[in-house]
Amino acid sequence: MADVDGLKIAKDYKVDVPFANQGDFHVKGAGSLDWGMKKHLSNIFDPVSGNTVMFAFDHGYFMGSTAGLERLDVLLPQLIPYVDVLMGTRGAIRTCVPADCRKGIALRTTSGSSMLNDDLSHEVLAVDIEDVIRMNADCMAIQTFIGADGQLSSLDNLSKAVNAGMRYSVPVMGVVAVGKQMERTGRFFKLATRILAELGANIIKTYNCEDFEEVVAACPVPIVVAGGKKLPEKEALELAYEVISKGARGVDMGRNIFQSQNPAVMAQAVNMVVHKGATAEEAYEFFQDNK
Image (cartoon, rainbow, N blue to C red):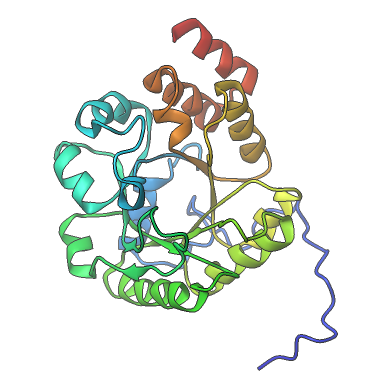
C-alpha cells in the first residue's frame, strides 16, 4: 500500500473551476452512468436547479419516538409538496408515505444499536437489494463511521451496497456520521467525503465546516448537507444559504423542519433557498409572515 509518510498536504482545490467531467447531465460525477442510475438521480436532484431538498425522518430507527415525529402519518402529507426526497426507513415509508407519492425515496438501509447504547458505530446492512427494488427506492442511504471503531464494517456495508446498486442501477448515498469523539473539521470532512466517493457512493451527505467549498471541490459527486441539531429557524435558513452558496447540491433537513414552529412553512422556506435562489433573509421573512 502507499506510504503515507512524507505526503504533501493538499491545497490546490481550484474551487472556482467547474467539475471537468460533467457532460450534459445535471448531476455531478454521473455523466457516465447508465440510464437507470440517471433516472433515479433525476428523481433526487431537480433538473432545473440541480439541487435537492431532502426531508430526513429516519431518526426512529435508533431513537424510537422522537419529538416532532410522533405521528408520521399526519406530518408527512403536510411536507410532501415542498420537498424533493423523503429519507426514511422501509417500515416508516411503507406505513406512513402514501403510495401515490411522486417524490424521490432515500431508503435507510443500515441499522445498529439504539440510543440506549453509547456506541452507535457498529451498523449492519439491514435491507437487501431485492427489497430496495420492490420499494422503488431512488437511493440507498448507508451510514459510515470514518475514524470510529465501526469504520471497517461500515465501509464494508457501503461497498456491498455499491456493488448491489451497480448491478441493479440504484444509487448509493454515503452518510458521514459524526460521533462524540469524532472531528468536525474541514480536514476530517475532506477525508471522509473523498473516501466514500472513491468507494463508489453517488451522493455524499455530510456537514458544514470551515473551508466547506474545498470539501465540495475535492469530492467528485454531489454533496448534500445535513441540518444536524435543531437551530432557530433563521439560523437553519442561513445554514442552507451558506452551503448552497459554497457548492452543496442540497440540504437534508430533519429536526430543523419537523421540530419547527410550523414544519410546512419551514419546508417551503428551505425550498426557496435551495431551488429559487432566495437569500436567508428573504426565506426567513416568508417564514415569519406565514408561520
